[in-house]
Image (cartoon, rainbow, N blue to C red; front, top):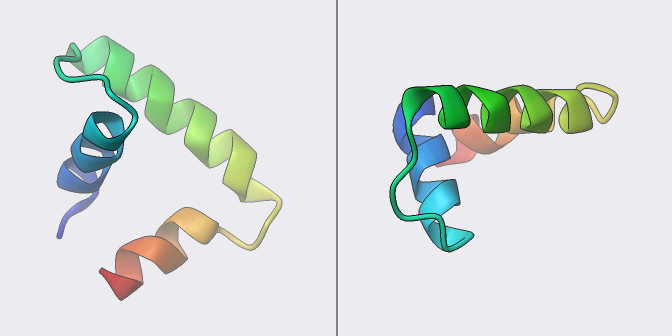
Length: 49
């Protein structure tokens, strides 16, 4: 699963069905900010999918 699909799936799980690219980028940025200090958890998750 690539990164874009991962974020789209995550958004669907959060109940956000349709997101523009800009909104997705905002979410990606927020997620990266939130996980940056915790050992790059996003990449860890992506590696396990």
